[in-house]
Image 1 (tube, one colour):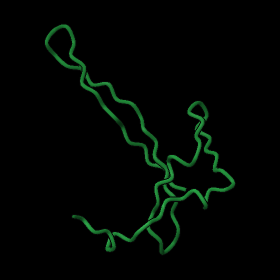
Image 2 (cartoon, rainbow, N blue to C red; image 1 turned 90 degrees about the horizontal axis):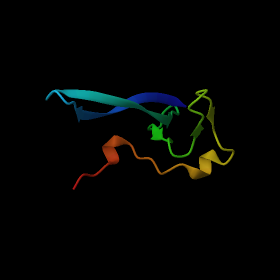
Image 3 (cartoon, rainbow, N blue to C red; image 1 turned 30 degrees about the horizontal axis):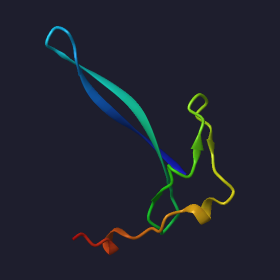
Length: 76
């Protein structure tokens, strides 16, 4: 399992015609297997935000979405 921490930011106006940024962390989790494409599993794993502990369900593999190699992705 690999984690990346992205940020979602909003611009909020202040009273003096300037703006202030408010950013919030958004953790994302990926399953990495040798020779396979990475699969995002953020919706499957459970994370305790206060401790950072990540819990992986026992039926984790059955819940994974189908993955494709980038070369097999067709854009229309």
